[in-house]
Length: 269
Image 1 (tube, rainbow, N blue to C red):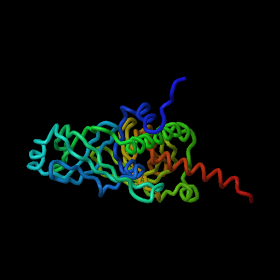
Image 2 (spheres, rainbow, N blue to C red):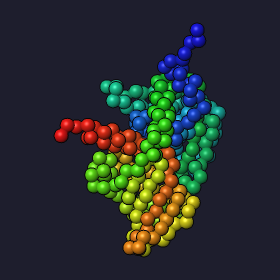
Image 3 (cartoon, rainbow, N blue to C red):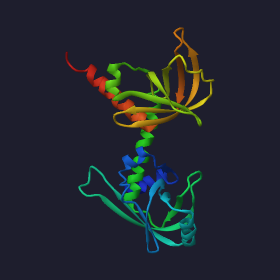
Image 4 (spheres, rainbow, N blue to C red):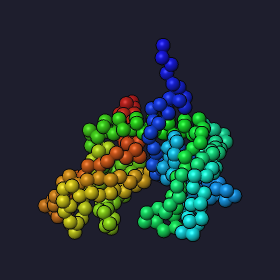
């Protein structure tokens, strides 16, 4: 009988080559204490911010001048230490990890002056870190399945549905290198959005890449989209429909909405 991996081992089997982009959402779900993340290089302690997590390799950002970047490049391929703390509702005390690493690369982040990228390879990955990362990737996998389900039914945004969604009735749309413009969300699901703009708005061609900011009580959702159609109504108002890319925050919000919606309908009169 074949032994089925459990615990940390199962996550290494399932997600060994996957990475986690350290968005605000991911860092919050992972429980990373961003004020307690340090790289110890020689006798120097550098406060850093996670940029990408992996089971064997991770990338961190640090505020470093060009002179400091040049200085720390001399430690490339040397042994360094990574210190991180994770806060979990299931623990009374923060989980403190110290990981021995190899500093694989040090360079400047493209387009960001005085921001350094530090690439580290783990000598040994602690089981606690594997479980934290693996549990998050497992959660995102579930959300990707729900992304399909919650892309089938539109939610018409009214004061009542907005309250159930926890939507603050504020959203913006931005084109590449363009200013943000406020919109009124007309309807939404996990895969598409319809919104209205004032009579002064221009029609956007099909296929235009855009970015949305949707303000909810739980999250400020940033999601990329592509214009599907844009038309001017008889009143002059512009109505636009866009296809949305996968956003874990939005799927979580819609999951909560549909749960509350069902619960509300099942309440006795």
